[in-house]
Amino acid sequence: MRLLLTGADGFTGQHLTRAAQVAKYEVFALAGDLQDASKVKAQVDTIKPTHVIHLAGISHVTGEDAAAYYGVNLLGSLNLLTALKGLALPPAKVILASTANVYGNHAASPISEQEAPAPITHYSMSKLAMEYMSRPFLEYFPIMITRPFNYTGVGHDVRFVIPKIIAHFQKKAPGIELGNIDVLREYNDVRDVCAIYLQLLSLGQSGQTYNIASNRVYALREVLTRLEKLSGQRMTVTQNPQFLRANEIFTLAGDPRHLEACIGPIAWRLLDDTLQWMLSEWHHGADRTKTKFLG
Image (cartoon, rainbow, N blue to C red; front, side, top):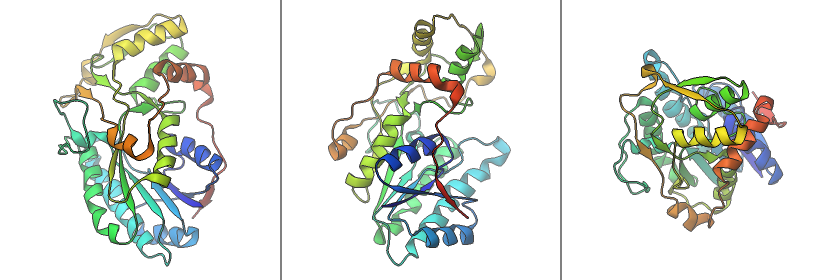
């Protein structure tokens, strides 16, 4: 089984590469710029993947660079799907990673896949546009959409809040500046998310959208308390108004029932297990696995 993985050098991609290799996939990483259609096609033609997981995308740009979201997340995805369509033997499964942020600020929780999307940022809008853009390609090969809710783990970029907090505990910093520490989020484990991706490669149904969600939410205030207990350190929190978001989604929890109907019950790791893993191994970063790069 030849798995083409975009975003293989990213946080999720590194963990997924290792998990896929353990599961006996031969993993190939798509190299270069997704916006270069000719190079994407050349690599796809060389790899001839039997399976595809498309993780790559932009999640952080400045306000002035908002167009980059659409260039990579939408048009780059179009280039990938167009290249796959040109294969003599189409892939058996294609997974496109979207985001739970497409739901916007829903009052009801947990959110199911039946909820109407209401994106409020360019990032989430570009991912929803990618979802819709993929539909004409269902005629040529099976495609599934995933909408992951928040997850974290070793190697996660410190631009995200949990890794930022972990890094402060690692440095034994006396305090930290944060935004709203009362918002409720899922903080699932990247290792569980990777296992779910591989199960969907086997069991997922074409044309379906799946929340990757646990419906377990925590306030950052509680996460900080847990980390203080695990580390034996105290951390003073100062609210920085610059970190407060005007369009903040207060509660973001997903309904996992559609996913579990497909792959079965999910034994999510406990939050304390994830936090302890990050505290213990953070300085090592994510394990890097040998991946075949072409391009």
